Image 1 (cartoon, helix red, strand yellow):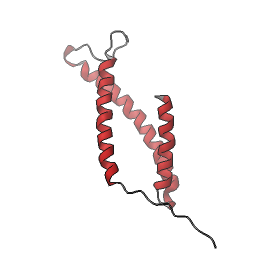
Image 2 (cartoon, helix red, strand yellow; image 1 turned 45 degrees about the vertical axis):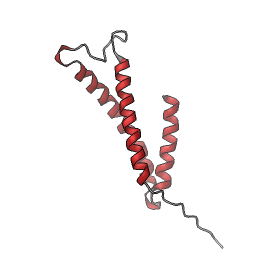
Image 3 (cartoon, helix red, strand yellow; image 1 turned 30 degrees about the horizontal axis):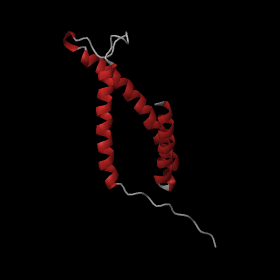
Image 4 (cartoon, one colour; image 1 turned 135 degrees about the vertical axis):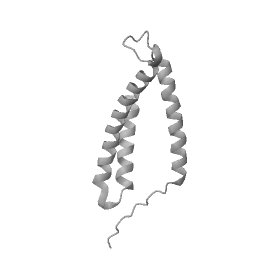
Length: 108
């Protein structure tokens, strides 16, 4: 996952830089890094939420201090479902996105 994340960060920075208007290129790069930070916070929140929801009503819970007693397979299955929903959303948004053409200044 670490190698995949390094590819994602480079692609995200490139997208924000090239698709932002000329006057907002630095803001686009900042938004790319901001979204990475927000994703880290949301990941922690999701883990805490899943742990507390699965322990309701006296349940054993998916996330515990002991890895052998935890059900990480359920948690990763849940993450797989979220990733699948994200891919479907991405494909829908991708159909309607129009790339901004790069304009090159030609000096004569």
